[in-house]
Image 1: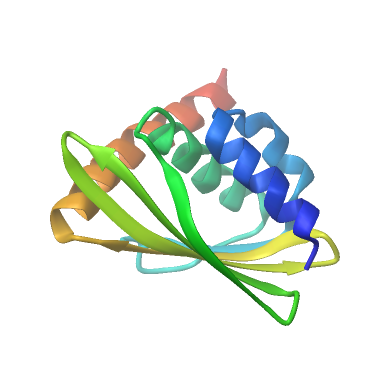
Image 2: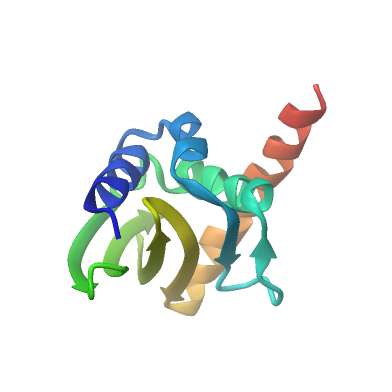
Length: 134
C-alpha cells in the first residue's frame, strides 16, 4: 500500500476537497456501505459514495483516532464525528493496490449515528447525481 495514498485520503476528508479523489481511486474499486446491501463497484460509483461521505463528514469534528497498517496493503482507521450531539464512530477498512484505493469498507455505530449519517449521505448522493446531470 502506498502510505502517500492514505495521506492524500486523510487530507481530503479533513479539508473537504473531494475533487482530488479521482487521483487515488482504482478503476476497479469497490465501496462497501454500512447501509447499502450491495457493494458499489467501479471507479465512478466509488467516487460518488466517497465524495458524498467527504461532504457528509466535513464540519462534523471528524477525526481519525487510531490506525493499524497490515502488510503495507491494508489500512484500518478508527474515526469519530458528531451529528447533532451524537457521537458516531466507526472503522474504515481501506485496501490499496499500486498506489490506488481498491476497496473501501465502512463500519459505523451506534444505530442513531448510522441513521444520522445515512440521512445526510442520501442528500449528498442526490446532490452528486444532480451535479453530474448539469
